[in-house]
Length: 180
Image: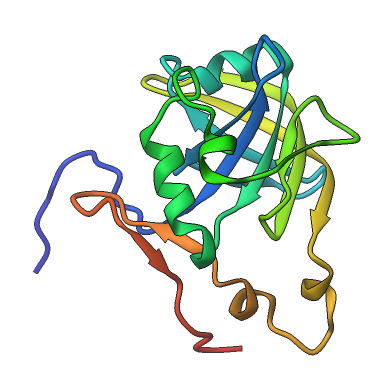
């Protein structure tokens, strides 16, 4: 039997990404994004949704670029930290010992230590309600060479993390492959 719970975000889980930007002063910042993912194939595009009250929102509006950096089990602590503190008050790269690398194709840094980094140019902005959605066209991808080996399962090697929404708000591994 099912029970109606009303209009809620009952889609579980969501991927965990870290969006990196430069602010007005050129300072690198990073924010954990729970609302995001693939939104188009050709051209390759991803979307992230950010509240206008955030430091990252203003950087996105000004620079029209971001990098999307895949969070993995090795970086769960960093993802949680970047989701709790504002770049307005804290230099998250410095505090976490992460290295911002200037992208060669967009006006945003990527996180050197993270295994996959997508350089995105913002091509559309949608005011939705509590969040603004930024659609970024993927202009380039930086990927650890170990992930390009043909004899490994990228997902099992990466161990990406997901975010439990609803009444959970925890970080989880995604588990093992269960079917081909």
